[in-house]
Amino acid sequence: MCQHAGCPPHVCFIIPPHMMEHVATNASDPTLRKRALHNLYHQGQLRGMRASMNQFAFAGLGTGTKQRTVYDAQHGGDLPGTLVRSEGQPDGQDVAVNEAYAYAGQTYDFYLEVMKRNSVDDKGMRLDSTVHYSTDYDNAFWNGQQMVYGDGDGEIFDRFTKCLDVIGHELTHGVTQFTAGLTYSSQSGALNESFSDVFGSLIKQYAAGDTADQADWLIGEGLLIPKAGTNRTALRSMKAPGTAYDDPTLGKDPQPATMKDYYSGSDDNYGVHINSGIPNHAFYLAATAIGGKAWETAGLIWYETLTTRLQLWSEFKDAAAATREVAQKHGAAAAKAVDDAWTAVGL
Amino acid sequence: MSTDQAAAPPVLIECQRQGGIAFPLRRPTISVAVAGLDEADRQALMRLVQAADLASQPAAFPAPGYPDALETQLTVAWPDHSATVRFRDGDGHPAPLDELAGWVLRHKR
Ligand SMILES: [Zn+2]
Image (tube, rainbow over all chains, first blue to last red):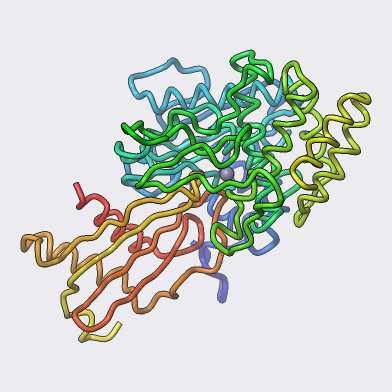
């Protein structure tokens, strides 16, 4: 612990960041790694989160070197938990561990093979996942450094490692963090959510080899535990926003498909998971109009937009303008499909 | 928290979670009536309520937390007043709030 007068113990900068990164990456003791990550995180908060997150490129692995670790929180709230699987180790008995490991790998493969991106940070960042987080934890999230998955409650939600697109969604929050940085509120937040849905769906389509016409365009299909007489199809539908679920307990999916039904309330960080239905639907329309495999053209347009054209406070009109411009590189038919898609959703 | 409040047993605890990747899907509110608890559970709950110290917490924590952070709303009701706090993954809230929420969620089973 730092003993310098006036220096809070958990944010002491006496250890240079590069040394802390080394400890965070290489220390064999999980407690030391955790403390180093904690310190880097707090340094980041003080220096500006976005800049700090680029420090987490500490793995610095060469392109194509996949590094995954899976931890078990054993139903507690401490992260990352106990290391239970490292890269190259075989499947074990725990299905959540196996899924977190396998689907992180498929997400890595998609970004490398299709987008030529070397992991979340494009510098080979190790993909860390924690499973069995907390109690009755009906959620998955990206905490700026790693993925975290709950087991669900067994009544409404199944385990959150179950769906490849959910894992792709969470890791794409990491990609967004290291690129456009889209602020998680209002339209920039809805774009952040939408890019996670778009690439989550594309990762699933790529793994299945589906064309745009064959894809289900659902996010989290199978995550909701079925109940007779209700619609618990998925969390979201990019093809038909507002139809993913309808259930007396859960409510009805409120996602709009077009700007006409734009949500202007303050819930959900001003509608980040609600209004994402609009750019989601625009992507679906563009991809199906272009035809073939959605990652081959529409996906590339959206990826170039996310990684080179957008920034912290970009809005829907900025994403529409940027994708329209990038689409020109892919021929007249693609440009028209993208233009028509945004026009159809009111942008 | 005042000494009186810390010493008085609550009558009801409610926990509701919403948000996360599944937002805006609605989730049920879990309520635990203290009168229905056995003595050991009542003592355990009292310790958790005191540690969570709702009266000293802000009604909501301002930081946005992580993408897809789950939001928890905890309400503790005493005979003559109540206190409510909302927090999310990654917003800097104290750990005892999670421990109290976890106890309530586990207790429904
Ligand atoms: Zn998300």
